[in-house]
Image (cartoon, rainbow over all chains, first blue to last red; front, side, top):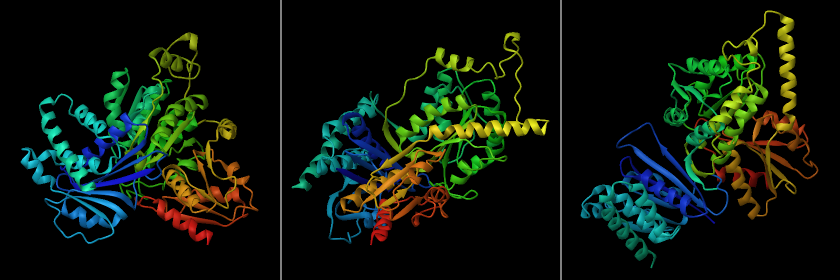
Length: 182
Length: 357
């Protein structure tokens, strides 16, 4: 069983961190194979940033693919640019706060999550990626949620003050993901 | 054995340190910057030396110098940067100096693009500089292989007193994967490895060791010819060092040949095609020099209908070695990307389907 994911957004939205958290959790807490492949141009802040995560029980071939099982888009341009990559029957997770264009495909599942607004409601715009990671885990259960949370805590390290905020953010995302699955 | 999650470039750097590398000099270029970045922090921790040189040429010549003392030494670069290093690599081969370097290849020719490619195959395997010297060239397909090959590369370099090249690409340098790292050699072991080279190395004045000379050229043409003959004998001995992955070839009607990143993508294509009932297999050279001619030569050509050579290079390069082994016994097709465009499983799958129809 192999599952591949593309995460796309603006530089600064925590796209790479989201991919790495998922990958670290898979590497350190499961016996599955995982690859993380970052892809960004010469741009810096404000440029596009995307990454690919492949999780598999077998050896992983391409660490990136033309055809994705899952696509997370954090902004409008990424929605338009990468929607075609999603396989028929695949799942789109969209930051509906800012990616507002109509979704032009009806052969996919769409999970809407206004993570920019939700992060602001929690008082810190930066946790939008942790919310979206929660959405993804809540919807897919690709790896257990407690394993992902452990990894988030480890990565926060000495920034203990941020743990309650991230806990709330992750829980919010899980709730959205689980509800969407019903 | 616990695994850790490492980026390809960092894994290569750590494997070098664990193998006993104590000197690195390099110059920045994408997509290999994480090798010098990592070693600038790591080498001082083990009493080693990191130098960011003023150029590729300066850096590789520092490695040439450091390696002459028997110190395990390394440099790295990417494609056009590797071209700049070629003069000193040739000098190392002529003077029979053990050193290791990594090419995290990008699109070419010239400056090309900063994105991953496999366009340096001929340069790596046939002519990395003037004079017709050769090297062992390892082509890892996973970060774990990059680790294992880098670790072993220093041992091969020391055994042969010859440069060894790790030929990777921008994908492998950039992806993160779980790896199990080999043991860090102790300082005593590293010292013993260095001391074992006192018979030829420049280790300072010690009457007991005799005088050492490093000769990248000879005054006498007969001496130079003899050096070439010695090199030839060394290259012939690599027959026993060939490494190749043969995957589902025993009943295969179609054989894919691919190395490095294209090799692992081709393997996933083989799995998909097998599920469709197409009898396809993969021959993946892990050493591209020495090349595994035998694996391709000994195929049963009454069964094999065609070979598909898959590379991230246009025009194809490894296909010439494949042709040498096939000897016109079946058609050879190519499936190629280049310039920084990455091979996809689907493209390979479609190419094989087209052959099978």
